[in-house]
Structure formats: C-alpha cells, structure tokens
Image 1 (cartoon, rainbow, N blue to C red):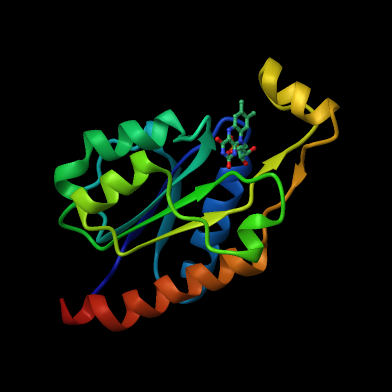
Image 2 (cartoon, rainbow, N blue to C red):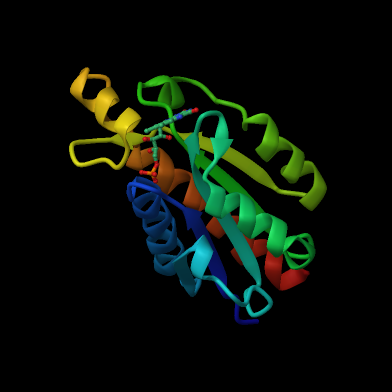
Length: 169
Ligand SMILES: Cc1cc2nc3c(=O)[nH]c(=O)nc-3n(C[C@H](O)[C@H](O)[C@H](O)COP(=O)(O)O)c2cc1C
C-alpha cells in the first residue's frame, strides 16, 4: 500500500525547516514518499497517510504556524499516525536528556493521540530575525545545538513504524 508522509513545520529562522528536511530525507531513503512543507502553506492534509509536525519554541510555546496547523487540521490529524517534534534549547540539554513537550503541545498531543514527541536542540545564529534574537546572539548565547544524529535516529524509528505498521492498518 503506498504511504505518503507530510512533515509540516513552523519556523522563523529556518533551523526547524532543516530538521524537517532531514526527517523527510531519512524517510525517503527508507522508501517512504515524504514531503517537508511549511505548516502555513499546507492546504490539504487528507491526501497524506501519516504526518509529522514540528515547531521552533518561542517563549515557551510552539511556533504559531505549528499551533495553527494542528488547530486547523485537527480532525484529519486525529485519524492519522502522528508525531510531533519541538526544537529550541540553545545548549546541549536536548542531547543530554529527554525534554518534555511544553504544556500547550502536551495538551494537543493528548487530544490528537500523538504517538511520540521529541525536543531537539535549537539554533540561533548571526542574521536571526528580531531584537531579542539578535541580543541572544550578540551576547554569545546563540549557536547551533541541533544534533543531526539524534534527528536521523528519531526519523529512522518513524520509518520502521510506518513500514511495519501502516500496512497492517
Ligand atoms: C525570542 C526567542 C524566544 C525563544 N524562546 C525559547 C523557548 O521558550 N524555549 C526554547 O527551548 N528555545 C527558545 N528559543 C530558541 C529557539 O527555539 C531556537 O532558536 C529555534 O531553533 C528556532 O527555530 P527556527 O529557527 O526554526 O525559528 C527562543 C529564541 C528566540 C529568538
């Protein structure tokens, strides 16, 4: 049975987009057709068999595009195999330990029956949008804390679940 996966993401500075693209690459390499698309430009979720939603964290909340996406498409998402990820911490904490979802994301997870959530390290570098972002970078607290090994491993697990599970759904 053909399986098409959507990786929808909310990003301001592009680092969550690269995480989403990495997840999509891993799934495609496993033979699962996958598209990584900015959450705000997804119009049709019905045509996907499974969905991964990710968002950068801003002030303790998921990126607004990710929040709107799960609100708008909740009914369809609740009927699909669904995974969430967040990206945020600008230190090694996300590599060192499991960071639980922020409360708003946890509530949606319960409502929609999300299979798993992971928090990946974030990235904030020169050229980031916004006064606060630029202050963080100029004070030396920015950097790239995305762990692509961990991201690929997480995507590989999703691929295994999809390949073994979806066919029996
Ligand atoms: C104004 C601002 C607020 C942030 N708030 C949080 C936060 O609450 N929790 C967190 O883990 N990271 C926080 N971060 C770090 C971002 O989540 C991180 O830079 C992330 O990689 C951004 O994703 P994006 O590049 O896809 O927009 C914040 C960054 C900025 C600039």
